[in-house]
Image 1 (cartoon, one colour):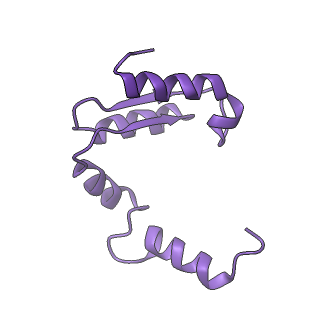
Image 2 (spheres, helix red, strand yellow):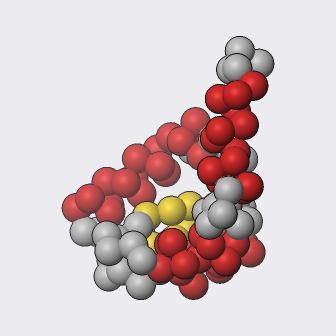
Length: 95
């Protein structure tokens, strides 16, 4: 982050939180996420975020998992579990 020019960071965050219809603002993101037509596979460390995401899913085959024992880098902290989750999703199996 320290090497990224300020204007690049501002543009990224403006689109998420400042601009009209920014998807980082919950009502806007909920409306955006409800329009998804493809299934989604997500994992959250927060029970609240997990419940929120589940409420936005309307595409068949979507899954949200709660990984309370994780930080921000799920794939690094739990590589085998991450691979299994993606593989099972890809092959239609469930964990």
